[in-house]
Image (cartoon, rainbow, N blue to C red; front, top):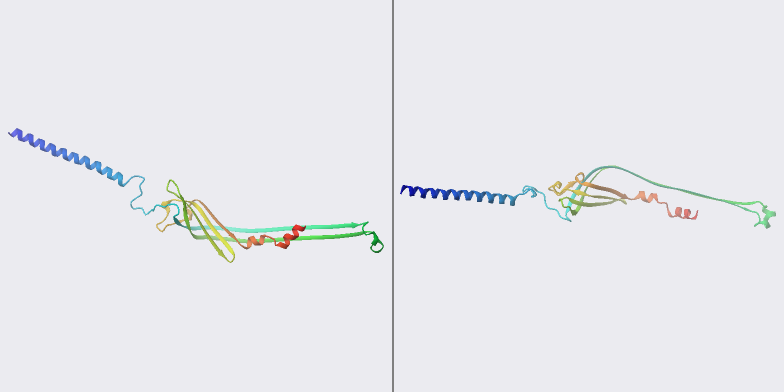
Length: 210
């Protein structure tokens, strides 16, 4: 009787132990699945403020660059023609009056010197709204932006192109120009320099004649 009772107890505890072992294995397995689902090496941090960018999105580029430029444009022409003609037969009828040795001389001298000069030495500080032109496979962004200003008949245009990392973009949706990889920054202008370099229509007419 006692032996049968012990056998029943042993079976009971064996079943209880097996249940605990099974529950433990199931818990470990489900925990691993849950962890793999929530996090993997390619997932972004749950605490990251980085947003997903797509083609056409706008990013503010803060340009802080030191530039020194000097532009000198000049054009100089010097055209000189000499004309010397000696009449010996054509004006024979006038020989008694004006002589037989008749020389007709002429000279055309046309000079033009145009010079335009401008010097710039400054720290370029600008804020440009650039757009995402392409999202690369590694998540980096190709951007391009333009800024055009016209003041006193002078036109200045700033263009920037390059590649940025999405994680370098601040929470204010801005990034500095020195963080742009393969940056191509161009500052160009038009105005009095280009106009001064070109000669006027009268000078061009005389150049065509001579």
